[in-house]
Image (cartoon, rainbow, N blue to C red; front, side, top):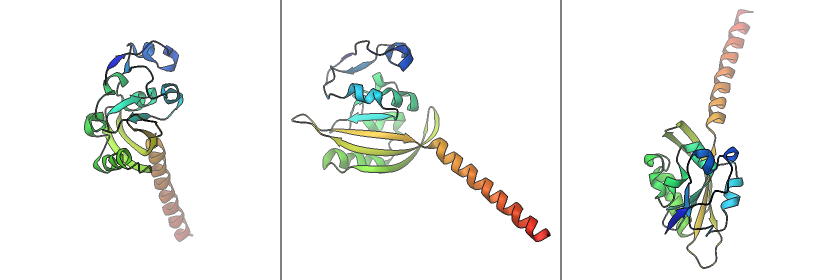
Length: 171
């Protein structure tokens, strides 16, 4: 696959290439037809080819995982985050998605990344294409804050129950 600099089409306010201080490198043109759609999504997304190489990533992925899109394109998905973002279980699901097209929902991963410890739910879908190599869309829903809030809530409920039980005994 040949790569060329992407034309400056996004604004600094949207976190596009000018906002990152570089031009960004993306596959020639919009060969798979969804660049604008990718950037419109708020969740981190990757587009993978049949060999599990990254064809494209959106700005949300770059921001969430501190991985520059320009460096990701053409790389094997296993290399993202130093190999920590794609544990064996997720890699197996991605291989099945690329092969037979088995979609998957809400596969939980936890990884130590440059931005800190992250918990995500990952979903994978096959993108319909005529003639070309099949592509897969992989979405990441960062649930780190939600999971931490659940833990704090559970701990708080346990403390409340303990205090209530103690108060009830003393009455």
